[in-house]
Structures are given as structure tokens and as C-alpha cells.
Length: 89
Image 1 (cartoon, rainbow, N blue to C red):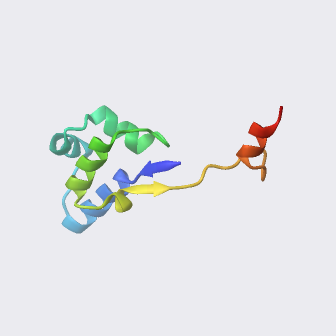
Image 2 (cartoon, rainbow, N blue to C red):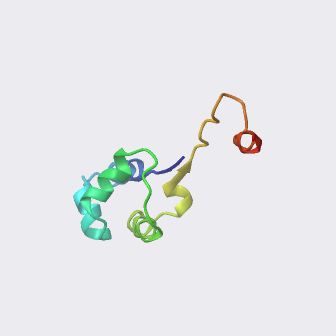
Image 3 (spheres, rainbow, N blue to C red):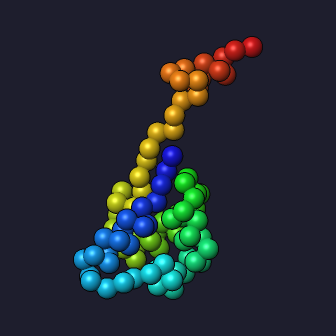
């Protein structure tokens, strides 16, 4: 699963600056709707586009590697590989 670390970056920004930056401010500065930001923060695996990723990287002054986290999805049926299911007829 791919996850955007907006909440973590926002918390880090607030801690470093001593100021409270809200998702509303992120929305205003990036042009990403508040509803989309809420989904990015609260919905695991929410899909967005590269324009949003670019805007968030610009806002947080970070690289995509600092914004994006990858966690492998669990394999179905325990240890079986997904490709094994496709070979069955």
C-alpha cells in the first residue's frame, strides 16, 4: 500500500515552527481541496494524482521519498504467491 505522510509532515512542521499550520492552510497554499486532503490523511491507500504530490512536496519543501511510504500488501492465503492463483485452470 502507498501512503502519503501528510499528517506526519504537518506535525513535524508545526513542531519545528512552533506555529499551528492546519489542513485548511495546506489546502489554500496547494490548491488541493480540503475534502481531498482529509481523504489523503484519513483513508488508507487513498489514490491521488502527481499534481497533488507535486503541490504537497512544494508546500512541505520535501522530496517524494519523504512524502510517500510504501508498505507491501499482505499476500492472499498466507504465504502463497498471487501468481499461483493465475496459473490454475
